[in-house]
Every structure is written in structure tokens, then in C-alpha cells.
Image: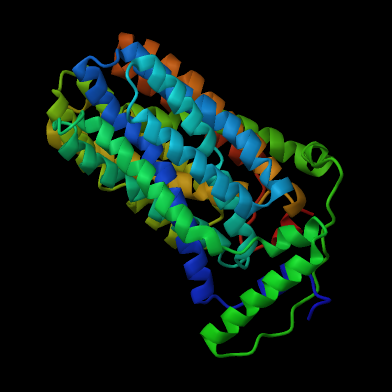
Amino acid sequence: MSLASMAARIERLPLSTFHRRFVGLIALGGWFDFYDIFMMAYIGAAMQHSGFISRDEFGWVIAAGFLGMFIGTVIFGMGSDRFGRRTAFLWMLLIYSGFTLLGAFAQNAWSLIVLRALAGVGIGAELVVIDTYVTEMVPSGARGRYVAITQVVGFTAIPVVAYLSKQLVPTHWLMDGWRWVMVIGSVGALLVWYLRRNLPESPRWLEVVGRHAEAEQVMRGIEERVVKATGQSLPEPAYLKVETAKAMVWRELWQPLYRGRTLMLMVFHLLQTIGIYGFANWAPTFLLAQGNGLGQSLEYGFWIALVSPVGPLLAVWSTEYFQRRKAIVILALLMAASGMLFPFSQSGAMIVATGALLTIFSYWFSALLHAYQAELFPTRARATGVGFTYSWSRLSAMFSTLIIAVLLNQGVVAVFVFMGAAMVGVALVVGLFGPNTNAVVLEEVSG
């Protein structure tokens, strides 16, 4: 058994309570990533309404957060290929929790901008490490579904933060209500850090970097837990070649096999962020710009947010039945089409219905993209490949936020034309240049 590669031994494991517990703990960390990103959409409208920040300053708050996320993605996302998935995970949560808590007590717009950038460093690579971690720990026949499950859990944070904002923003108990929304997010992340102390490191990664004794110890522990949970002995592992770590992991992204994938994902992330975060971060502000009051905007935002987990749930069902590449193309086009309906909605029912439709398509798309991107690179460079290409989404979010703030002066329709064009570009680049990956062992996908 010990002569078989870690990949082979992971592939032959039946799904059990070990996998469900592991993915559950990982998903809790992702929950606070979503809470943090979407929190600003709801409390940002309140901060603008109260005069704490202007619309232009709000654009800088969002942009600063994504700048920090870009830096964090480079440090922790790419760094987890060197220091390990678990280590990067824990440090990210600590940094995020501390600076989010400080941000709750910011005294002016510019101190909030700086603290949002620093909090972004901590949370920037959370989804990168989650995608990498789960992809390496789950057998190939279920990895897309399990990555989608982490997205389902994560997206439940959106209705929660929308509800908390709706309830707390109007209050002024000891301090402004929007500050309590930030405090709750920071304290929760510390709880997850405590729960995740006993997570195992990825045996695949340990083996690739030459830490064979640790890989064997972790793998045997996992196998014992699976045997105990299933009550069955494990089948013999099939032969799978062991990867070897390279001295210059960065160069792997530009080898002939991976160069096209790297470039494709760079363009993909530059564009997809405009569609997803453009709406998510600005929805209540769009409603304010259309003449709705703060309370009404938060009310509509809450009802739209309620459907957030539906998209990832559809991804759990569909991700192993349909090629992820093709599904991403179709959903990108549906996002572009449904987005154009939103600015023309007049009644409350139509605003909620069109916003909910766009939200479902967006988060279904998001769950599939996170499963897909982690499959395209080898274990020795997976976090580097995903981290580097995903970092372009953070840069895109930063600059597109500033562009949206300018376009909004021309009206909400101009913003949605901008977002729709970006999603059409996503469909083209993935449809033309993306490989198929479903149910293929990672070592085969990566050549």
C-alpha cells in the first residue's frame, strides 16, 4: 500500500463521513469569505445614506478591498504551493478577522479604506485555497460536486448578511448598526479558525514536495477513518504516476501544455468579475440610484439575496452530469441576457424577480468556475496556477468598481451593458479555449 502514490490511494477511497466533515469545515471558512465580500454591498448603502462616505469614496472602499485580495491571492494562494494548504488557510483567517474587527471602529472613510485593504489580504486567497484543497482531497468522480457544496454553504452567507444589515443598520446601540455587521463577521471567522485546527494537510501536496513520511502518516490516518466509517476494507489502489516538485513552479504555468490554460484563465477572470461582483457589490446602490429609499433598497436586496444558495445547489446537481466547460459558457450568456432586464424593472415584484434570476445564474456559474479552474494545473503548481490567474479577478474587481462608479453617473443601463459585454467575452474565451475535465483523474488532466 505504501508504494502506491497518494493520488491513487485518495482515488480509491469511498466517499464517507470523513469527506463530508472535511468539506463542511472547509466550507465554513468560505462562508466568511462570502460574508465579507457581500457585506459591503449592504452596509455601503447605509454608509452613503448616513453621510459617512460619499458614492466615490464607497467605490474606493470596494476597490481597496479587492486590491488587498489581489495581494493576498499572490501571497497565500501561490504561497500555499510552498507552505501547504492548511498553513495558508489558518493565517488567512487570522489576518482577516483582526483587520475586519478594526474596520468596524474606523473613524473616517480613508481609515476604513486602508483597513479594508488589509482585511482583503487575509481573505484574498480563501477561495483559491479552498478549491485547491478540496480538489486534491476528494476522488475525481465527486470533486466537482464537493467544490460546489462549499459554494452552497458560502452563498448562504449572503441572505444572512442581508438580513443582519436590514435589522441592524437602522439601530444605533453603542455605535452605528453597520459597524455591528462587521463585528459579527470578524468574530465568526475566529470561531472557524478554532474548528479547523485539526484539518489534515493534503497528502498529494506533501508527497509532491518530498515530505513522504508526513504524507504517509496523514494518508494512513485518513484511510483508517474511512474504513471505520464505512465498515469495509479498501480496494487495492490503481497505478498513478507520482508528480515531482519543480525548482521553479512559476515556469510550469508557461510550459506548452499549460500556457494556453493560463492565458485563457487570465482573460476569463478579468471579465467574469465584472459580471458577478458588479451586480453583487452595487445592487442596493443601483436601487438607490433608481429613486428607491434606503429601507426599500435593503428590503429588495434581502429578498434577492434569499435565492443566493439556489445557484450553487443547481451546480451540485449538474456539475458531474454536464461538462463544466459547456455549462460555464451557457450560464455566462444567461447572465448577460437576464442582467439587461434588471434596469428596466419598475415594480417591486419585477425588481426582485429579475434580480433573483440574475443572482441564480451568477452563483451557479460561480460554483462551476471554482470547480473547473482547480482542475487545470498539476498538484505541484495548482495553487500557483489558480492563485495567479484568480488574482486577475481581484485586479479586475478593483478597476471595474471605479469604472462602474463613473458609469453610474450615466444611468444604471450603462452599467448593465458593461457587465453584459464582459459575460459574452467569458463565453467566447471558455468555449473556444477551455478543455473538458469531468470525471478525469487530476494527474491525467494535468498531463
